[in-house]
Image (tube, rainbow over all chains, first blue to last red; front, side, top):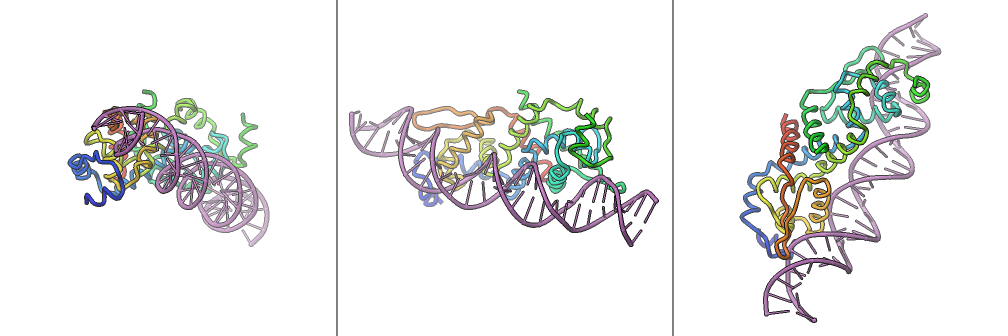
Length: 119
Length: 119
DNA sequence: CTAATATATGAACAATTGTTCATATATTAG
DNA sequence: CTAATATATGAACAATTGTTCATATATTAG
């Protein structure tokens, strides 16, 4: 273990107990990976805007595109990303597809972030 | 206004009141941009791991690098990103620089995300 | 059935991003 | 002062990502 550290870092000021302790408390690698993936989805202006719009009511793809002066294709691609991340769900009504928030967890994450941004 | 929509979208099913209402309630463009930037910072495994490590205690650059088997340079670059986003702060002690969380808002955002990932 | 139309999607391209490598800077020991 | 060393940083490169364009798919009207 110590060998490994030495290979990768020339530094000597390694606080082993601190590292062991922190490693012990950390969620599994996979969870942290998924968490980063989740935040990545929130990390784009277009997607943030879409989510924000859906806080008020469900909307069809065309509404959202018109709302932000963006192409239908761009919005559709992003809705796909949001849906894969389970942040939005949709329902079909004839040719129109209405998107809405998957749960109100989404707003909580959004609001926590907002609070930090506003300071 | 309607003209503009037509230019950008051939769709006819535009719910104007819905759009107006949602646009009215939305935070300013700049806030949403900053919010996306914030989430972008959370949207990387390395940075998520660093933040997670710092939940337990402050750590020097070398500790973090050793902890995740990563180079000092990679960690240093990422700490810079985290610091610009005001998610971490640091203190100097001789040649060693110790990083810690800027405030406990960070953990709240993290935990909200974690809750969604765990489902 | 055909035409119209709302949405989805693949490929391409430009832009952004994370790591590595080399090296600069800052601090301490001597 | 010089040597050692913890950290920071710029340039380069590969990988990822968002939008556009063209087109496919699905649904409804007739």
